[in-house]
Image (cartoon, rainbow, N blue to C red):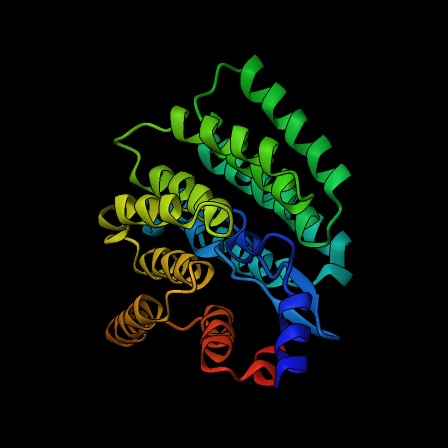
Length: 278
Protein backbone atom coordinates (compact mmCIF):
# COMPACT_ATOMS: atom_id res chain seq x y z
CA UNK A 1 0.00 0.00 0.00
CA UNK A 2 0.96 3.64 -0.34
CA UNK A 3 1.22 4.01 3.45
CA UNK A 4 3.66 1.09 3.73
CA UNK A 5 5.72 2.39 0.80
CA UNK A 6 6.00 5.80 2.45
CA UNK A 7 6.98 4.18 5.75
CA UNK A 8 9.69 2.22 3.99
CA UNK A 9 11.08 5.29 2.21
CA UNK A 10 11.01 7.32 5.42
CA UNK A 11 12.94 4.62 7.26
CA UNK A 12 15.89 4.63 4.84
CA UNK A 13 19.13 6.26 6.04
CA UNK A 14 19.68 9.80 4.84
CA UNK A 15 22.61 8.48 2.84
CA UNK A 16 22.02 4.92 1.71
CA UNK A 17 25.58 4.94 0.48
CA UNK A 18 26.44 4.05 4.06
CA UNK A 19 25.01 0.59 3.44
CA UNK A 20 28.39 -0.32 2.00
CA UNK A 21 30.43 1.93 4.23
CA UNK A 22 34.10 1.51 5.22
CA UNK A 23 35.85 0.29 2.14
CA UNK A 24 38.59 -1.61 4.01
CA UNK A 25 36.48 -3.13 6.72
CA UNK A 26 33.02 -2.66 7.92
CA UNK A 27 31.49 -4.82 10.59
CA UNK A 28 27.78 -4.64 11.18
CA UNK A 29 26.96 -0.94 11.10
CA UNK A 30 23.27 -0.77 11.93
CA UNK A 31 20.51 1.74 11.42
CA UNK A 32 16.97 1.82 12.67
CA UNK A 33 14.54 0.90 9.90
CA UNK A 34 10.87 0.92 10.78
CA UNK A 35 11.64 -0.23 14.31
CA UNK A 36 13.81 -3.06 13.00
CA UNK A 37 17.61 -3.21 12.97
CA UNK A 38 19.01 -3.25 9.43
CA UNK A 39 22.56 -4.58 9.30
CA UNK A 40 24.85 -2.95 6.80
CA UNK A 41 27.28 -4.76 4.58
CA UNK A 42 30.51 -5.88 6.20
CA UNK A 43 33.95 -5.94 4.59
CA UNK A 44 36.25 -7.59 7.05
CA UNK A 45 37.46 -9.96 4.34
CA UNK A 46 39.30 -7.13 2.62
CA UNK A 47 41.29 -6.58 5.79
CA UNK A 48 42.37 -10.20 5.61
CA UNK A 49 43.61 -9.57 2.08
CA UNK A 50 45.75 -6.71 3.32
CA UNK A 51 47.17 -8.27 6.42
CA UNK A 52 47.59 -11.94 5.58
CA UNK A 53 49.37 -11.95 2.26
CA UNK A 54 51.14 -15.21 3.04
CA UNK A 55 48.87 -17.10 5.39
CA UNK A 56 51.28 -20.02 5.76
CA UNK A 57 53.73 -17.73 7.53
CA UNK A 58 51.28 -16.99 10.34
CA UNK A 59 51.94 -18.82 13.59
CA UNK A 60 49.22 -20.87 15.24
CA UNK A 61 49.08 -18.28 18.02
CA UNK A 62 48.61 -15.49 15.50
CA UNK A 63 45.91 -17.39 13.62
CA UNK A 64 44.04 -17.97 16.87
CA UNK A 65 44.34 -14.31 17.83
CA UNK A 66 43.09 -13.21 14.41
CA UNK A 67 40.06 -15.47 14.66
CA UNK A 68 39.33 -14.23 18.17
CA UNK A 69 39.72 -10.65 16.94
CA UNK A 70 37.27 -11.10 14.08
CA UNK A 71 34.77 -12.85 16.35
CA UNK A 72 34.93 -10.05 18.92
CA UNK A 73 34.58 -7.40 16.22
CA UNK A 74 30.84 -8.04 16.01
CA UNK A 75 30.36 -7.93 19.77
CA UNK A 76 30.26 -4.29 20.94
CA UNK A 77 29.52 -5.43 24.51
CA UNK A 78 33.01 -6.97 24.72
CA UNK A 79 35.12 -3.89 24.07
CA UNK A 80 37.73 -4.68 26.72
CA UNK A 81 38.34 -8.13 25.28
CA UNK A 82 38.43 -6.78 21.75
CA UNK A 83 41.02 -4.12 22.49
CA UNK A 84 43.12 -6.55 24.50
CA UNK A 85 43.37 -8.90 21.50
CA UNK A 86 43.87 -5.94 19.16
CA UNK A 87 46.82 -4.72 21.24
CA UNK A 88 48.41 -8.18 21.12
CA UNK A 89 48.03 -8.40 17.36
CA UNK A 90 49.41 -4.93 16.69
CA UNK A 91 52.43 -5.64 18.87
CA UNK A 92 52.91 -8.88 16.98
CA UNK A 93 52.77 -7.06 13.63
CA UNK A 94 55.35 -4.52 14.79
CA UNK A 95 57.66 -7.30 15.98
CA UNK A 96 57.41 -8.78 12.45
CA UNK A 97 58.06 -5.31 10.99
CA UNK A 98 54.78 -5.58 9.10
CA UNK A 99 53.59 -2.00 9.41
CA UNK A 100 50.95 -2.45 6.72
CA UNK A 101 49.24 -5.12 8.83
CA UNK A 102 49.80 -3.00 11.95
CA UNK A 103 47.96 -0.08 10.37
CA UNK A 104 45.27 -2.36 9.02
CA UNK A 105 44.40 -3.57 12.51
CA UNK A 106 44.50 0.04 13.68
CA UNK A 107 41.97 0.96 11.01
CA UNK A 108 39.85 -1.98 12.09
CA UNK A 109 39.89 -0.51 15.61
CA UNK A 110 38.64 2.78 14.20
CA UNK A 111 35.92 0.95 12.32
CA UNK A 112 34.89 -0.76 15.55
CA UNK A 113 34.14 2.71 16.95
CA UNK A 114 32.31 3.80 13.80
CA UNK A 115 30.09 0.72 13.97
CA UNK A 116 28.88 1.95 17.35
CA UNK A 117 28.54 5.47 15.90
CA UNK A 118 31.29 6.72 18.22
CA UNK A 119 32.48 9.07 15.50
CA UNK A 120 34.29 11.45 17.86
CA UNK A 121 36.41 8.60 19.25
CA UNK A 122 36.89 7.22 15.74
CA UNK A 123 38.10 10.55 14.40
CA UNK A 124 40.51 10.97 17.31
CA UNK A 125 42.01 7.53 16.62
CA UNK A 126 42.17 8.26 12.88
CA UNK A 127 43.96 11.57 13.35
CA UNK A 128 46.44 9.91 15.74
CA UNK A 129 47.14 7.22 13.16
CA UNK A 130 47.55 9.80 10.39
CA UNK A 131 50.08 11.65 12.58
CA UNK A 132 51.95 8.39 13.27
CA UNK A 133 52.06 7.53 9.56
CA UNK A 134 53.36 10.98 8.73
CA UNK A 135 56.05 10.93 11.42
CA UNK A 136 57.22 7.47 10.33
CA UNK A 137 57.14 8.38 6.61
CA UNK A 138 54.91 5.39 5.94
CA UNK A 139 53.10 4.99 2.65
CA UNK A 140 49.63 3.74 3.50
CA UNK A 141 47.76 7.05 3.50
CA UNK A 142 45.03 5.73 1.20
CA UNK A 143 43.91 3.44 4.02
CA UNK A 144 43.56 6.17 6.62
CA UNK A 145 42.03 8.70 4.22
CA UNK A 146 39.39 6.16 3.29
CA UNK A 147 38.40 5.47 6.87
CA UNK A 148 38.32 9.19 7.71
CA UNK A 149 36.02 9.63 4.72
CA UNK A 150 33.77 6.93 6.12
CA UNK A 151 33.64 8.67 9.50
CA UNK A 152 32.32 11.80 7.81
CA UNK A 153 29.95 9.69 5.74
CA UNK A 154 28.56 8.20 8.94
CA UNK A 155 28.09 11.76 10.22
CA UNK A 156 26.19 12.67 7.07
CA UNK A 157 28.88 15.09 5.87
CA UNK A 158 29.02 14.25 2.17
CA UNK A 159 31.44 17.05 1.27
CA UNK A 160 34.11 16.03 3.77
CA UNK A 161 33.58 12.33 3.08
CA UNK A 162 34.11 12.86 -0.63
CA UNK A 163 37.22 14.98 -0.06
CA UNK A 164 38.94 12.27 1.99
CA UNK A 165 37.81 9.42 -0.24
CA UNK A 166 39.19 11.26 -3.26
CA UNK A 167 42.47 11.65 -1.35
CA UNK A 168 42.46 7.88 -0.88
CA UNK A 169 42.03 7.32 -4.62
CA UNK A 170 44.79 9.83 -5.37
CA UNK A 171 47.18 8.19 -2.89
CA UNK A 172 46.68 4.51 -3.72
CA UNK A 173 49.26 2.93 -6.01
CA UNK A 174 47.92 1.36 -9.23
CA UNK A 175 49.95 -1.76 -8.43
CA UNK A 176 48.14 -2.12 -5.07
CA UNK A 177 45.08 -4.01 -6.26
CA UNK A 178 43.62 -4.44 -2.76
CA UNK A 179 44.07 -0.74 -2.07
CA UNK A 180 42.44 0.12 -5.40
CA UNK A 181 39.47 -2.07 -4.54
CA UNK A 182 39.00 -0.37 -1.16
CA UNK A 183 39.37 3.17 -2.45
CA UNK A 184 37.07 2.82 -5.45
CA UNK A 185 34.36 0.81 -3.72
CA UNK A 186 34.38 3.39 -0.92
CA UNK A 187 33.75 6.24 -3.34
CA UNK A 188 31.18 4.21 -5.27
CA UNK A 189 29.24 3.57 -2.06
CA UNK A 190 29.33 7.26 -1.15
CA UNK A 191 28.15 8.37 -4.59
CA UNK A 192 25.50 5.68 -5.08
CA UNK A 193 22.64 7.78 -3.71
CA UNK A 194 23.99 11.20 -4.74
CA UNK A 195 25.51 10.53 -8.15
CA UNK A 196 24.57 6.96 -9.12
CA UNK A 197 25.96 7.21 -12.66
CA UNK A 198 29.38 8.08 -11.27
CA UNK A 199 29.08 5.26 -8.72
CA UNK A 200 28.33 2.77 -11.51
CA UNK A 201 31.37 3.97 -13.48
CA UNK A 202 33.57 3.60 -10.39
CA UNK A 203 32.29 0.08 -9.74
CA UNK A 204 32.90 -0.88 -13.38
CA UNK A 205 36.44 0.49 -13.14
CA UNK A 206 37.28 -1.61 -10.11
CA UNK A 207 35.51 -4.87 -11.04
CA UNK A 208 38.56 -6.26 -12.94
CA UNK A 209 40.73 -5.63 -9.86
CA UNK A 210 38.21 -7.53 -7.74
CA UNK A 211 38.63 -10.78 -9.67
CA UNK A 212 41.31 -11.96 -7.25
CA UNK A 213 39.09 -11.07 -4.28
CA UNK A 214 35.77 -12.88 -4.94
CA UNK A 215 34.04 -11.45 -1.88
CA UNK A 216 34.82 -7.93 -3.02
CA UNK A 217 33.72 -8.62 -6.56
CA UNK A 218 30.34 -9.33 -4.97
CA UNK A 219 30.57 -6.06 -3.02
CA UNK A 220 31.24 -4.14 -6.25
CA UNK A 221 28.14 -5.74 -7.76
CA UNK A 222 26.15 -4.60 -4.72
CA UNK A 223 27.45 -1.05 -5.19
CA UNK A 224 26.15 -1.15 -8.78
CA UNK A 225 22.83 -2.65 -7.72
CA UNK A 226 22.43 0.02 -5.06
CA UNK A 227 23.15 2.73 -7.64
CA UNK A 228 20.51 1.38 -10.01
CA UNK A 229 18.12 1.31 -7.05
CA UNK A 230 18.58 5.05 -6.64
CA UNK A 231 18.20 5.54 -10.39
CA UNK A 232 14.91 3.61 -10.07
CA UNK A 233 16.12 1.38 -12.91
CA UNK A 234 14.53 -1.95 -12.07
CA UNK A 235 15.67 -3.68 -15.26
CA UNK A 236 19.35 -3.04 -14.60
CA UNK A 237 18.93 -3.72 -10.89
CA UNK A 238 17.53 -7.18 -11.52
CA UNK A 239 20.24 -7.86 -14.10
CA UNK A 240 22.92 -7.09 -11.48
CA UNK A 241 20.95 -9.01 -8.88
CA UNK A 242 21.03 -12.15 -11.02
CA UNK A 243 24.77 -11.70 -11.63
CA UNK A 244 25.26 -11.40 -7.89
CA UNK A 245 23.30 -14.59 -7.13
CA UNK A 246 25.15 -16.60 -9.78
CA UNK A 247 28.57 -15.24 -8.78
CA UNK A 248 28.02 -16.06 -5.11
CA UNK A 249 26.88 -19.56 -5.95
CA UNK A 250 29.78 -20.24 -8.32
CA UNK A 251 32.33 -18.96 -5.78
CA UNK A 252 30.58 -20.52 -2.78
CA UNK A 253 30.46 -17.21 -0.96
CA UNK A 254 28.65 -17.05 2.37
CA UNK A 255 27.57 -13.56 3.44
CA UNK A 256 24.09 -13.27 4.88
CA UNK A 257 24.43 -9.53 5.54
CA UNK A 258 25.17 -8.84 1.87
CA UNK A 259 22.25 -11.07 0.94
CA UNK A 260 20.02 -9.09 3.31
CA UNK A 261 20.94 -5.83 1.57
CA UNK A 262 20.15 -7.22 -1.87
CA UNK A 263 16.95 -8.81 -0.58
CA UNK A 264 15.84 -5.48 0.94
CA UNK A 265 16.40 -3.61 -2.33
CA UNK A 266 14.71 -6.38 -4.31
CA UNK A 267 11.69 -6.35 -2.01
CA UNK A 268 11.37 -2.59 -2.49
CA UNK A 269 11.45 -2.95 -6.29
CA UNK A 270 8.92 -5.80 -6.04
CA UNK A 271 6.63 -3.51 -4.06
CA UNK A 272 6.93 -5.64 -0.92
CA UNK A 273 7.65 -2.68 1.35
CA UNK A 274 6.62 -4.38 4.57
CA UNK A 275 8.99 -7.26 3.77
CA UNK A 276 11.76 -4.73 3.07
CA UNK A 277 11.12 -3.12 6.46
CA UNK A 278 11.22 -6.50 8.21
